[in-house]
Amino acid sequence: MTPEEIKIKDKDIHAFLEVFDDAKSEGDGPLSGKTIAIKDNIMFAEHKVSAGSKILENFIAPYDATVIRKLKEAGALIVGRTNCDEFAMGSSTENSAYGVTRNPYDLERIAGGSSGGSAAVVAAGMVDMALGSDTGGSIRQPAALCGVVGLKPTYGRVSRSGLIAMSSSFDQIGPFAKTVSLVETLYNVIKGQDPMDSTTISDGTYPTIKKFSKTIGIPKNFVESEGVSVEVRKNFAEAVERFRLLGYEIKEIDLPNLKYSLPVYYIIMPAEVSSNLARFDGVKYGMHKDGENGIDDYFQTRGAGFGQEVRRRIILGTYVLSTGYYDEYYGKAVEARHLITKELRELFEKVDIMLTPTTPSPAWKVGEKSNDPLGMYLEDIFTVHANISGCPAISLPSGFVGDSSGNTTSLPLGIELTADLGREDNLFVAGKDFLNETH
Amino acid sequence: MDKEKVLELAKLSRISISDEEAESLSHEFESILNYVSEVKEVSNSPRKDLGEFETRNVMREDNAGHESGIYTEKILNEAPARQDNFIKVKKIL
Image (cartoon, rainbow over all chains, first blue to last red; front, side, top):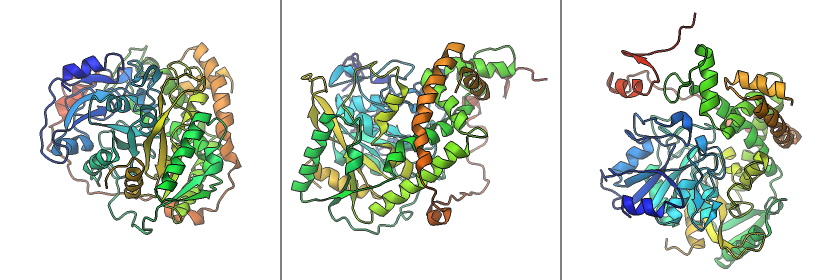
């Protein structure tokens, strides 16, 4: 599509914050001839990047993120930046300071989040592929709700140099596309150790121990948690049956600590958010709002520049890190994080993949959960374990369902495959099998 | 958690919020903290079993990363107030 065609198509969806009129392909490589959109928290030199926030409304990226440099070298055409929840905090893009992105399959509904714009532009066919970031499910959840493929790579696999930080022990950049093959191609372009990000890993960091053996583990009690909709359960059972017919061995597994993933996430993430977002002070860059004195400038700038959800998480993070509560919350969460990781790594000695739904329900209506922060957080139940452990996980489209009120609307759903640290290869093999793609 | 506690935390966070927002946050925090408190049930595992998670520092030589001055204009242009090659702030003392 030309920039004009994209703008017309995007009018009702509002997935793009900006379509670049001057887009040009610079290199020649595996992405030549392909169009790509980038989430509005990845720096593309000389272009605006706002992280969906008023506080960075007119910020111009002074340099290219490492992933952008790699996209250029690979010949991709970067056509625009996509809407997201403010600083990637949310599950619906309703927290963007620039308006909500609507689901291409039903404009009354959310596209998911936080990388909702990136999922929607791929689903609507406006671009071939997109980049998002995933801190607790922000690639996989919108991919599922928009019916596309989305991958969160192993922690450290993709450089975060030039990604606006949210929660640094969880954040990871990853690809969206309509097929596993194209997701794999894009993943191969953006991955790799980077001197600009000391948390990146080398190919040798996680040596391959177990050969792929077509075995899948299903945490049955977890999948049947309270709050998982009937439609999701039925769709998931069909996906399991499909893997069985493809010759996969299905094992029921029990990970007793997996259920603590979400509480762990909603302690550690706000703690890191409160630290990372201290840099927005109205002095160095971004919005400035004048107060009575230097200190009051901070209060006024941050009070006016940050949206409601960002304020909520910074203040909550300040609480869980404060004297007297640190051990009770943050300390316990770090212990539990280790236990969950250990359980998952031991599981992957026995099976190649853990299979769950990606989301507990299909896309909800815009505004439906706006006044219920905890209800919104519970939407992340099936995705946060991958960020807590660092394991790679992919969401695959698994068909369409109606919603619980019996509407005839066809809403996409996704299933999620999680693999051991460093084993994206297993996700690609099983993903192509599931979607009937050639290897 | 009460409104006063939230206002105190907002002060520590350097964020100006209204009394109404503090009141509503205090209720939301009650339900969120009640939910995340589930982690307290997790039995403590001795750290020695978890040696593989020990963090390590990543060091590098303290070299100049790029030619001096090439980003100066771009970065200073983003500052809300500037004077020559300095970021301008209010008088502190």
